[in-house]
Length: 276
Ligand code: SAH
Image (cartoon, rainbow, N blue to C red; front, side, top):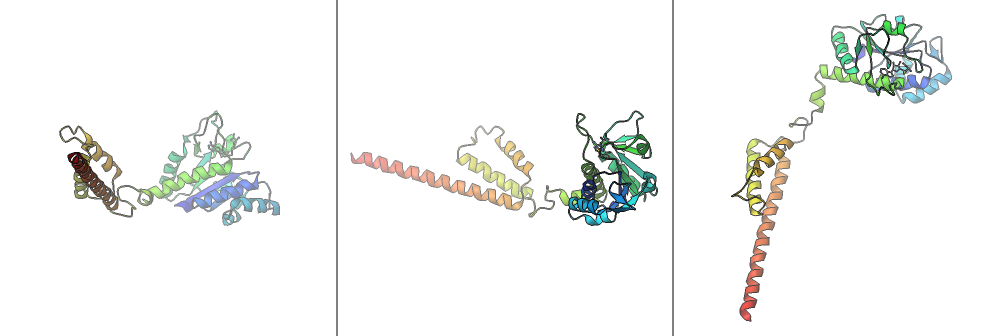
């Protein structure tokens, strides 16, 4: 699906931004870059200086900007696209269907499922997209930035939009939660402790808390249910429960030797008394 997404940069004046946009695209798994009348190009080729600056900023995504198609107009850049998204920081006097990147990405996935190619169109550094260019887009995508300082660098805007597109595509392909959900034993190194193991742990915990006189069995209040709630929220695995059981065992041992030391010292002091 990601190969159905095209990035179109209009009239970019700084070659470094083309390199940075290529890098942003490649990190998100995109390849299809089209440049509309970029500065520093002649007959569809970058000048030596343009190449050098773009290459440096692309940081290894050289292939993406080397393969970029150079065209003269937005019409040419988007002729084979089913849905065109125009990114702009500015609201317009003639309102256009407006979406934030997440909504736009879910719409893009719908369109791509139906085999459409889609385009993400970005404007010039200084003046953005003209009204005529935005009118050639189905949707105006606005990244919800600070209203008092709304405009991102064009390559940063490419990064944000292509990231959202990638998230939506991975999610649609069920690759997101399966790879990233690090709770409930998913992608975990050990199995979750089962309820039987948890119950034995809570029994052990309760008796230790009584032994160390933290829990008064005649007035337990809600200590145990609260501790149960805490540990169940953490969803401990088998190894973690074993560690906790080990801690309780050593606490029990320390408590016993403490108690016998106390008995021994009491016995010693009473025999001292007897001597006198
Ligand atoms: N001063 C220009 C800003 C251009 S920034 C203007 O007023 O439009 C260069 C490009 O980055 C924009 O044309 C747009 O495609 C993209 N961009 C920057 N900030 C954006 C935002 N908040 N939402 C959507 N696109 C944005």
